Length: 427
Image (cartoon, rainbow, N blue to C red; front, side, top):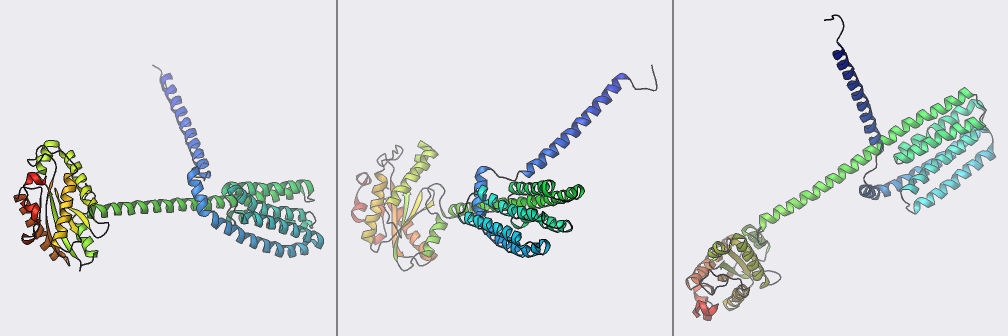
């Protein structure tokens, strides 16, 4: 056995481990690069991008006009400085007029509310026109004054990035064009030394890089804020829908959709308390047998159809039907006399019977029917409602005792001929 050197198998394992670590490092760099490149792409999905532009387009056009006016004013102020540096008044005036005409064209285009490409390109072109003017005039300047003009040009990327806040892609194009204009202008026409030209281009490049980073951060935050606001609005809408649904569940019966007890009391609290009303209690005859025979799903459907039949007999306003519990319903009618009330409640009974819902387990005619009891009076508060409900409940009990499928009112105001008819005849 050889000592002092690793075996061949161990060496291969170590090489494999090194290769794995190198691959992991390459993957890490690749992932990091892909992550940052993905962050540079600030655009949303097409649909969200369109919404973002609709939400921010008007504010951006306003900002562009405002900054454009400021840039135009600074151009005229800067023309005075250029005249002091150059001493060539005609050249400065012609260059300033050219920028003014170009700015006027940009203003006309922006007034037409163009799309994103034209809007951003116009503002970028407006800044680049000033860069071209300054670079052209620098050819006539004394070499000792070149750095003053180059410093003014170096500020233009920051104008595009921070003041105008061009979209990042257009700011990249504008900054690249600024550096290219300076580099080409110095290389072809400038009398400065090559080293000085190099430093001028380097300064412009560094200024462009800083400006682009600021532009990227500003747009990223703007888009993050928009996404957060949109998410907040969506959450608020969902919360409103949830609250509406909760309020509906609180005040409405989930199965039939009509008011429940709480909803009925709240509705009465908002109604005219001086109006004389009829409180009607309706009970589905032999409903437990219906559920046992046909099943609970059929029973639920039966209750829903009965609810619709009752609601169709009511006036459009002022009258409500509520589920009072189980197979019982409470109906509030605007009725000022026992005769009117009796006729209205009888119409409800017939409407349910006319549905023709089969009920073979019922001993009264083989079809679904209801029994109803009513009471009349003013409902000024919950005590009045409870009193009328109690009287209507006693009348309902009397209807059940009379054989069901009939209507009963207070003892002195029973529904005359209906009370005397046999149950089978009333069917």
